[in-house]
Structures are given as structure tokens and as C-alpha cells.
Length: 118
Image 1: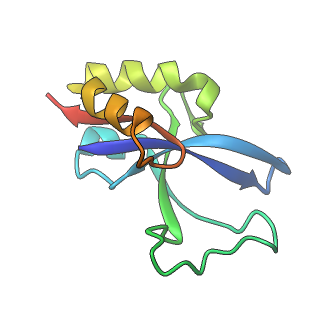
Image 2: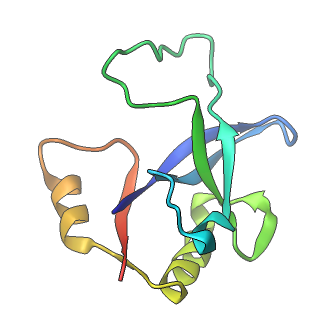
């Protein structure tokens, strides 16, 4: 099972911040790997503290590229393109676990949903 989450990303080329879609953990599925890019997680400001010993954040993340335009990272407003791609490649959204994690006391920051292979 995989988590889809949002992440704020500083696009240094376009000089703007983007809310992109990431996956954790990185799947071994070659169809999904086609639309993933490993990117370095940058500090968004000098005041960011990522020294929390309980933090699971690594320096590299697996970010989706837009399946309809493979040159761009997938921004949250185009998540429909990702869902179409995932469904056509045998994935489904696990709505029951997603609901538990979104409504429970313990929350995963920036969680969109959980997905799994059919």
C-alpha cells in the first residue's frame, strides 16, 4: 500500500512554489516508475527545522510527473490525470483506510489518499 501526499516544492527554474504530488514508499512497479522523478527535498526557508529525530522525511522524494505532459511535475490541480493513469494500470484508492487516517486522532500530514494494486 502506498500513500499519496502533497509537498510544497520550490521550482528554482520557474522561481515559484508548487504543491506537487508525491508517493511513499517508492513502488517497484515499472508502469508507475515511468511517471516518477526522484527529486531533492529542499528547505523552503532558512527557518525550517528538519532535525526531528522521529521524522521519516528523507532528503529525496518520489514526485509524480504529469502523465499527460511528462516534462512537468504533477501539481495537485491536475490530480485527475494521475488517478486516471493509476486506475488504468490496476490501482485503486483504499477509501476505508484513507477515511480512518483523515478522521482519526493520528493524522499523516498532507495525506491525499492510500492506493494499492488490485
